[in-house]
Image 1 (tube, rainbow, N blue to C red):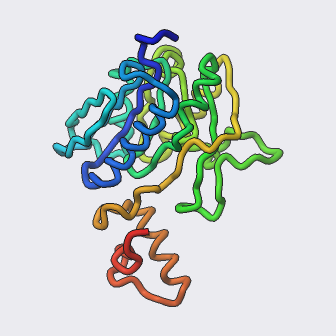
Image 2: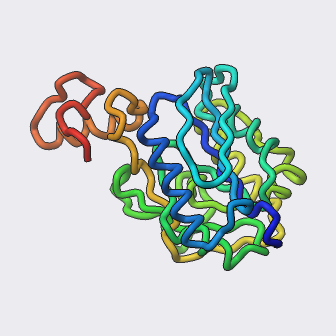
Amino acid sequence: MTRDSILFSIIIPSSGRRPQALRQAVQSVERAGRFAGLETKQLEILIGFDGIKGRRPKSAYPLQCFNLPSDKNQGNGIRRTLVRVARGDKLIFLDDDNVLKPYALRSFLRYFDTELIVGRIDMQLALKQPYLPIMDDCPIFRNGNVDLLNLCVSRRLVLDRCGGWQADDGVKAVWKNINLWQQQAHSVTSIEEIVGVYDAGRSLDRRALSPRQMALLDGLIEKHGAQPLVKGNSIAMLGAH
């Protein structure tokens, strides 16, 4: 680790339909970078737009945007491309509607020699379970218990030993890659710090909810005895939360 080396590459796949959420995600990276005392050259942000010329957010840290061919595969093709472009020692995967906590990068720096670091994430906007991973007697690495947002992973582990991002159909690819990394990692550690917030930007762009987010909000409204104004568009009733 040197002052001139890129320590972190932040990989963000985006449909381009959530510019406000994307801006918030990038701002969260900036705050985390400043909180960790990272110099400009020590952090890079890579955004891949899925078949669209997206709006480039401003950033104090180096930021590259890639207008990639339409993939429509839950960001898997974008992650595969950006992993190959990344130059940082560590990779962090941040969806455009999630955010990093201000002390996330500083927490990861304390375990920088570890190939796979698992932090905790706030899931209260998406699940009844408030945090992931669930710490119980079962293995941490099990499907649904660890999300990409939990992780800080060595680029060499992902690219060299695991052959890059293993794109597959839909959300199954995420678990496939996480499982492969934990099997191949020479060192793994879990930390208590909350490093991210899931779905933090879900209501910033009213017409750009994912199908999962639509179903979640519809369910919340129906639970309270109301009906969405438009099925699958509950945000019109809830407003910005």
